[in-house]
Length: 254
Image: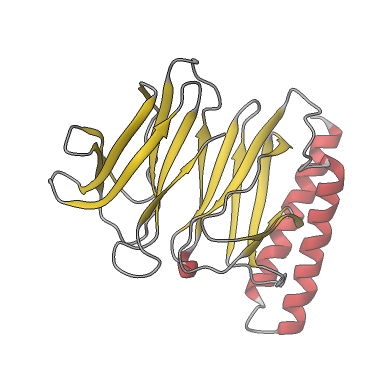
């Protein structure tokens, strides 16, 4: 075994162990909670310095790209940490970050209310990114049960073709169909958290509507969607079907 890799594996196991201890003592002994959480962070910082992650410069063929979308309608603006290092700051609802170029591998992602770096993130989740791929990771759901949902992005397409897909991130909306207004369904029966495959479309302007799955009941109209050749689009349903902020569609492109 590679000695360097073995050392990194041991450090990662220690970080996980101290994190478990910190959680165990969180409501039993605040002093021990802080003690073990600090030890957890020290291990994470060592891993960070070893891997030198989260650069905006492409320095290796083994890199990936990742951006974060804030899609939680009742969550405040947030700061995003990777392996204990802040990588995004003050990301607001419906805002998507720029792509960050990172080495492929596994990361511990933590999300905190902006400016409130404590031992209790609103989200803590591990993700894995593969070399040569671009990802959008959506922080989705209500803040009480926030989760990170990664999707692999398409960044190139033929100049005379537009690619589009649909991502359902409205926490209280049922399964829906996406259709051309008054016409055929193009993305059928899409449930919360689900992202469809890309579809090849002719460039141009189209009016879309969101229907309750399997019905003609329209819950949202999306007029004048401009699809340009050579681009790949992700239409994202965010907000609440019943409540505020209300249901709407936002569009992401690389």
